[in-house]
Image: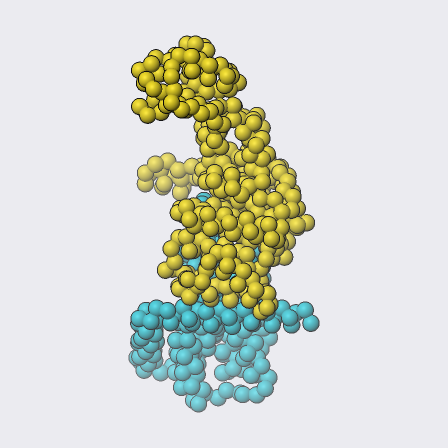
Length: 337
Length: 269
C-alpha cells in the first residue's frame, strides 16, 4: 500500500548573523548551509493500518508527510502509495488521499462551511447521490450540523478541525493523512475526532497516517508507531514492542502507615543503584518509587519495602507510554535503530 | 472529446468559484460598497484626467485625439481581462508561497495554476473594462475603422493574446517566489511597464521603444494591434507579433511555474 524507501530531504538555508548588519551582510554575500530535514527514512504500511508518526518538534514528521502527500519533492529516495508516486502523478494521486494539516485550514475562510463542501464536491467530481450520503455520514460521525451554515471564520478550533477532517474525507480517500489533528483541542473534541477516525478506518479500510504529540491518540488509535528524531527513524513497531524494548522501568506506589519509617528506606544503598536507575518521590500522601526492572527485580523491591515498613496500600505498574517516550525524546533511553 | 470534457469541467469550476467569490463579497457588505464607490471614483478621475490631457494635445506624433483614445481604450481591455481572472498571482508573489499556504493547492486534483487563479475573481477589473469600452464608444465614431469579418476575428485574437502577454509576465515574475519566497516587487516592476502601452510607442525614445517592443512586449498589447485597426499595416507583424509574444510568454510562464512547483519548500508547521 505505502512503500517508503530511503527517503531524504535537504533544504538550503542561509545563515544570518544577528542584527541589521548581519542581514545586510548575508544579503550581499549569502552563506549557505545544507540542512538534512529527513534522512534515509524507510517504512511500509499495509492497507487498513493506522500508523502513528511521532517524534519531538522539528524531528521531520511534517516534512515526511509533505513528501508523502506530494507537496514536497524528495531530494533522494522514493515513496509509492497506491502504486503512484506522489510528486510525479500528483493530480491522479491526490484524488485517492485526504489531507488535514491541523495548523492550517483548507476551508474557504469567508464562506459558510457548507459552501466549502459544495466546491470540493465539484473539484473531486463526487456525484450528487454519493455526496448526499457522504455528507449525512460525516455529519453523523463529526457532528457538523450545528455549525454547517456558519462562516468558517466564526468556527471554534474544535469545530474547524472537525470540519477540516470532513473536508478531507468527502471523496472517500483510500489513505488519510492527519498532521496533528488534535492539536489544541479539548478532551471531548479529541475523543470525538478519535472515534471518527476509528469509525472510518474500520468501515472503509482507510489507511491512516497521523502525526501527533498526544500519546492518547497513539494508544487509542494506532496499530503501529514509527518514531523519528533529527530526521532519522529510531523506532518502528507496535506499542507493546515499544514498552518491551524501552519500558524496563516500573513504578511502585504505596501509602505507608509511618512516613518517617518510609523516609528511611534506602533503596539506592541496598541495591547499589545509580540515579539513572531509581527515582523516589515522597509527597506526604504517597511514596512513588520508579526503578529499572533490569537492574533490580520487582520482587526484591517489594520484599525490601514490606519488611522495613508497614503499608496501607501498595501497587506496582508498568511505566506508561508517556514516560517511555519522554525518556527517548530526552535521549535518556539508549536507542538502537 | 476528452479535451471538450476537460474544457467543460474548467468552465464549470470557474462558474462555481465566481459564484462563491461573489458570495464572499456580499459577506462583507460595507467593504464591498466602499470598494465599488472607490472604484467608480478612481475610474471617474481617470476619465477626467484623460480629457484634461487630451484637450491640451490635439494630436500626438501624428495621431489625432480620438485615435489616441482608441489606443488607450484598447490597452485597458486585455489588462482588465487578465486582472479579472488571474489576480491571485499577486498573492503568490507576495505571500502564498512565503507562508506555506501553497500546500493546499498541491493536495487538490486540479492543476495548481488553475486552482490558484480560479480562486479569485477580481471584480475591480470591471472598472477598467468599463472605461476601456467607454473610450471605444467615444473614439470609434470619429475614426475610420475598417470593420469587416476578418478584422473582427483579428480583434478577438489580438485581445486573447494581449491578455496572455499580461498573464505571462505576471506568471513568470510571480513564479520566482518559489525560489526566493517573495517576488512581489519584481512582478510590480515588470507589470508597471504596461503604463507605456497606453500611448503610441513612437513617442518614446529608441531604448524605451525597444524595451516595450522586444523585451517586455507591452507594446503588442495595445499600440501595435490598435494601430493596425486604425491605420492598417501589416497584420502579420501587428497582430502576429501579439500572438507570438503572448504564446512565448505564456509558455515560458508555465514552464517556470512547473519548475517552481517542484522547488517549492513549504513552511514549517
